[in-house]
Length: 92
Image 1 (cartoon, rainbow, N blue to C red):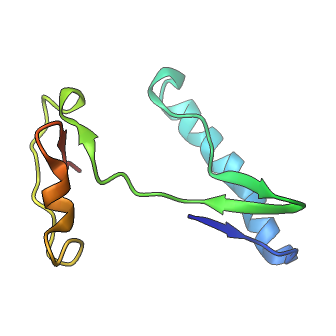
Image 2 (spheres, one colour):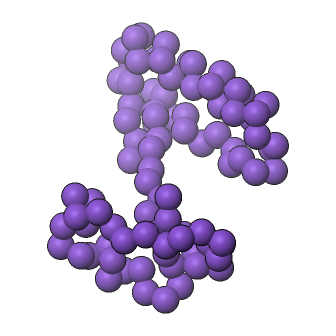
């Protein structure tokens, strides 16, 4: 999902802070363990804030962590649980 500022200065000021926050994480966590900052994007002449949730993790990448069931508030109809299959898990 992307949210655009539509030219509003207050939102742009907040977006300008995000790279500074990402730099703090990069200093605290080795660069090979953190993904490149793709939170800030653009749409035509406007800046965007890109967000996402990672509900599924490949099972091969989560061998040492406990698999979790989806909370009813997140998956009230069990659709996400059915999508997991044998190749993916839901973890914290």
